[in-house]
Length: 210
Ligand SMILES: [Fe+2]
Ligand SMILES: [Fe+2]
Image (tube, rainbow, N blue to C red; front, side, top):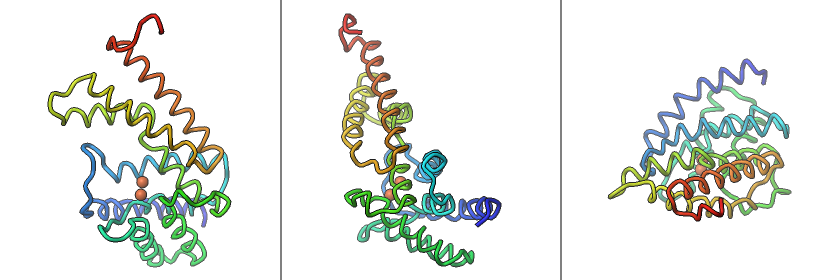
């Protein structure tokens, strides 16, 4: 697929995916828009693909559909893969390319699969998904989300974000590409610095330790 065709296919799938996500009966956290998440994951995936390689058409179209579907009874990756397959077949994308996209959508949240058993494209989609909502974005998100709590305040934001940071830091072993791992480490480093400085500014940490 040439880059012009790919660009046009992505532009055509954007409103389709947006409307599929809007129709989902899936509870989202406050201020978390899953379509905006999809577009940010696309950015991360393109950043990884530029360095690590892989077929850009497979990576970007799999990302576009990875969270398009939802069901209370079936893994959303499977539902999303079916939606991707239908759309791409309707657009007359080569069957072999469709199969690879469907596979990358299906495995995007199966993080227990060893990286040796996954194609590069599948691994890029998984890492790009993990990279969203880390770092500065995470802190902003937690600040927004805290605003909906009773008695919101800076300390509550700090506490919420510190917990989120710890859970994200534990996921580092799940990264499956070299560049994805590097980007994840960078985000964690910046995020940790933000939290340290926030604790200091709020008087929660000993200034002598700064
Ligand atoms: Fe997902
Ligand atoms: Fe996602």
